[in-house]
Image (cartoon, rainbow, N blue to C red):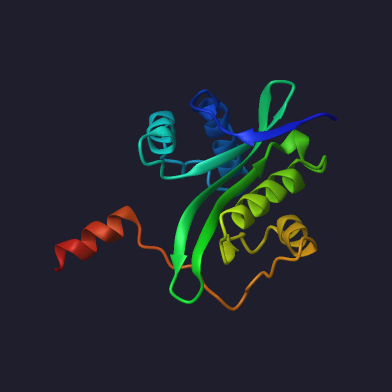
Length: 159
């Protein structure tokens, strides 16, 4: 199978959003996606993009994505966060996930990051095994902490 890995373009965002929604369904959160096509287009392609996205294209169709953004570690310095690596269900097991992860790691190395971070849901054993096979450490002793939009508003109201 022939595929291309490249930086996304604004015109890819409808297909990127489709993959985001496919992931939400897979992760049993079909109604959790709030990001819109307009958000993706504005946030990823303005003067100061909030993210960088690589796409895996097969027969002129985006079948996978790796969406990353810059972070900074007080212990390590420059790092990037891999928000999501998504491959369409019909294309899993064909090398697209590996190719996308290779692109992220190569990109991170080229800009001199000290670490690449991401999360994986604890029941997704195929993804965990995939990441571990690539040399990643799944840190099961750390918990993800989030403050939702509602939580932020409630927090601010108590200040």
